[in-house]
Length: 121
Image 1 (cartoon, rainbow, N blue to C red):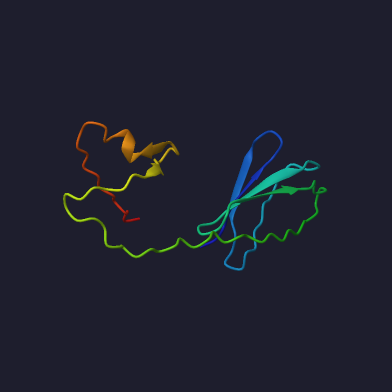
Image 2: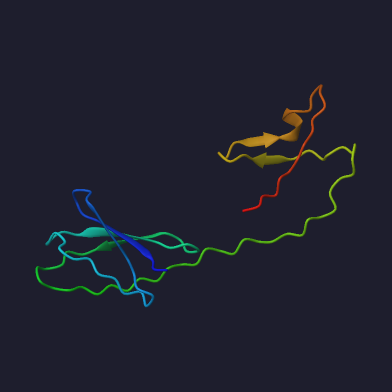
């Protein structure tokens, strides 16, 4: 599919369109004599914002933008893991909100069952 484009004017009004397969796009009936911000989003690429200089009335402006591919996710082998009833080494990992959690924070005077779900996304 096409790449999603949003053009935002000074007042915050957003104009949206998609590119063709060749990357061509058109916005029509835009405010004149003001710079705008073009936001480009496409799966697998970093979002990009570009400032578009004012375009005079009844003129067309060409814009060339190159998107940066997101780095590929490293695939790791499953590894051996631990045997049942073995003790896990201490570690620290962030949760979904970035807050760090250490195994030692949870194991003081109690048993802990720890399960890692590697995801299915």
